[in-house]
Image (cartoon, rainbow, N blue to C red):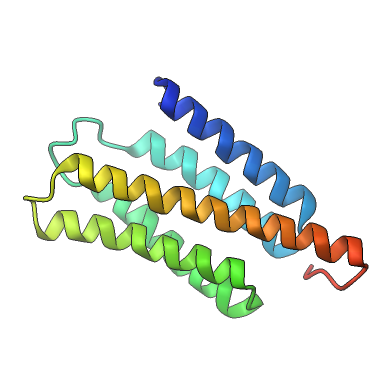
Length: 143
């Protein structure tokens, strides 16, 4: 699952961001961090490493996550959560593009998928920082 140095570094970054957001933020950050952590591991577990076929199972997972994150963004109205939902939508669109046009090179699709995933993590990090700043100011944190 996490056999290469790149995947191990990615897992370490993901874990650090999720732990920070869960610690620093309110309910939206904690919930999002938990979902991202579980989904990242699940995505690595169900991935077809032959890369000869589109990643259908990962598409289903990512489409589900997109719906969840859009719903959360509509409920809590945090800008970081809206960006995370947007990057998740782009991740899902990357899968759909690879299915619709098999000429899309597998490496290009994987690279786009990784870029959107790390930008989603950056959005979660932003949410953690926003939660920490809100807590330090003594303002209300969404619970």
